[in-house]
Image 1 (cartoon, rainbow, N blue to C red):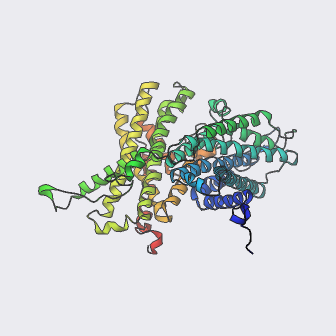
Image 2 (cartoon, rainbow, N blue to C red):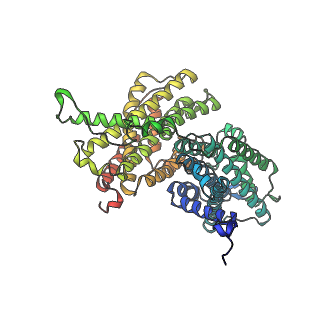
Image 3 (cartoon, rainbow, N blue to C red):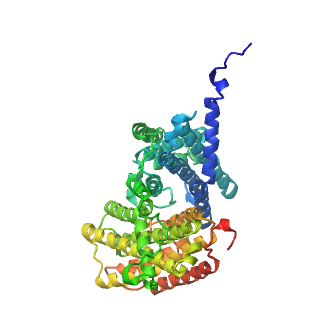
Length: 555
C-alpha cells in the first residue's frame, strides 16, 4: 500500500517566515561584523570621539546653574553618532550592492521574499546601533561618571528605536536612488558626515550661528537634542520630545515612500560597469597596464620619466572614473565651500582673515587629505591585495616609479581642488588672492600633500588590506578635520590644542597665510612641522611597507 504524497511546506522543506528572518538577520550581522568600515564608523568612531573629548576637555561643568558636565552632554552625542552610522550607510550600501551583484534579482527563485531581505538588513542596523548605544553608555558611566536618568529611560529607548527606523528608511531611499554601490556609498557616507557636522554632533561647546537653524531641518539634530535632554539630570520632565519625534517620523516616512516608489529588485548597471565588462574596455581602476610600443621604437625600454608619467595618467583616469573617490576629493570640498560661505556671509572675518579665504584654505586641505591620505594609500593597498605590486618585478615598471606616478596624480588633483575653490571664491564671494600668494601656495600644497601621502603610506604599510586602510584612514582624518579648523571654526580652545600636535592644522595655517590678501607669506614654523611629519612618516613607511598580499605569508 503506497503512502500518499506529502504536501505543504513541511513536506517540501520550505522554511517558515520566522526561520528565514532569523537566518537573514544572522547573515546580515555576520556580514556587517566582517565589514571594517561598518565597525569603524558605528562602533570605533563614536568611542574614539568620546574618549578624545574626555581626555582633552575633561569632565568640566558646562552650566554652573544646573551642574551639567561635558561628558553628560557628550555621551548622548556619541549615541546619536553611532545610531546614524550604524543605521544609514550600511542599509544603503548593502541593498545597493545586492542589487548591483544581481543578488536581489535572484530572490524570485529562492524561498526568501525581498521584504525579508530588507528586514534582515534593517535588523542588522538595529543590532549594531544598539551595540553602539550600549558601548557609549558603558564608557560614559564607567569612565566619566555619566548618570543614567531612570525617569527618562523609557523615552530614551523609544527615541533610539525611532532614530534607527528613520535613518534606516533614509538608507533605503538612498539605495533606491543610487545607480551603483559606489554611488550609494558616496551619497550615504558623505551626507552622514555633513549631517553630523551641521547638527553639532561632532562639536561640544561651540558652533557657527547658522548651524542650529540648518540642523533642525534635518533629523539628526532633533534626535541628538532629545537624547541630550534625556541625559540631563536637571531636567524635570520624563524626556518625551514630541516635536523631535515628529521630525524623525516625517523624515522616516519620506525615506520609506521614496524606497517604495523607486526600490526595484532588478539589477541596475551603470554605463561604466557595462564598458568595463565589454571586450577591449579600459582596465579596472588601479590596474597596471603594460607599456606598448610600436614602429621604430618597438622593443625600446621606456624611460623613468615616461613610466612615472604613464602611472600618473593611469591613476588620474581611475580617479575620474571612481564616483565615490571623486565625490569626497573634489565635489564635497567645492560644494561645502559654496554652501558654508553663502550661509556664514562673505563679509565675515575670522582672526583678521576674510572667512571666504580662510575656508578656501580649509577645503583645499580637506581635498588634499582625502586624495593623499585616503584614496592614494587605499588604491595602492588594493593593488597589493590583488597581487599587482608583487608582479611589478617582472615588468619594466620599477616599484618607485609606480608609487611616484600615483603620488604625482594625487598632488595634481590637490592643485585642481584648490584652483576650483579659489575660482568659486573669486566669482561668487570676491576672494582676492595676490599673485604672490598663488605662487607661495603651490609649495605649501606640495609639502602638505606629500606629508599627508607619507602618513597614508604608513597606514598602507601597517594595516593588512585596503579595506582596513580606508576605514582607519577615515577614523583618523575626520576627527582631525574638526580639531584642525578644517570643518569647524570658533570651537573650544582645547580642540585647537589637540590639532596642534598633528600636521593637518599646520597645513591649514600655512595655506591660509600664503593666501592671506593682507599680505602673503610663508609660515616657516608650520612648514617645518609638516616636513618633520613627512620625513618620519616616510621613514616608517619605507621600512615597513609590504609588496606582497598578507595571504602570501611574506613581508
